[in-house]
Length: 277
Ligand code: OGA
Ligand code: MN
Image 1: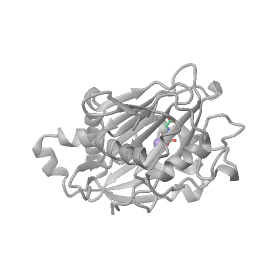
Image 2: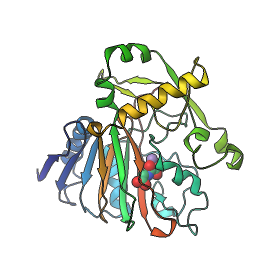
Image 3: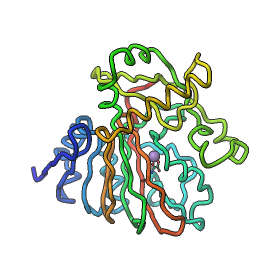
């Protein structure tokens, strides 16, 4: 199998070099799934997939999911591909893209199992900004003091769209359907494998049963802990790069970029198979 893997940091990230033609074989896709579990973030430098190839690769990793109701820039030929752009000609709801400047996991506010993986390719990069950062919630959880692990073991968190965009939009300015989106999840998510992660980030609004202040302070403290250097990787994009990450084992955010930067990314998502309810 023509695949070369180089780890980026001890706790997160691998660079995967593989021929474009080999990517869609069962053997390589299976290896990618194992690596994803182990490394959290996989970078395929300048692999240059078309939308069709990106969808085919996404399908190899699991069932495709499209939790984004309206798809800016989408067309029927590539359904399931979400175009990320701040270009006002294409995206008339910039608040949801501006919200990605803040740590989050995709799909947390929808009543679905947390999406297993997100797949992102760079179509046009920004001259300045636009790097995507990832933080391993597996590694961060594992490194928590035992006392903290015990304190958070049974807690539940309400994730809301209003919280996700709180830095960039008022609740009143949101589409009523989006404003109402919320979903409760465990703070500590134990996978069938026994591995534990934390479902946190800007979508996390309240800790159920705690005062607003106490809950918010705890969520902020866990986020700060997870965002430490040793658990994070910042990807500097080149056109044609593809990055796949374990959406519930890593938080992500993008470094701000200009509205007229032209930055354009194509995202696809792999459905989760383990519920977090
Ligand atoms: C998103 C997102 C990251 C990026 O669209 O959900 O997090 O780098 N995007 O654009
Ligand atoms: Mn995202």
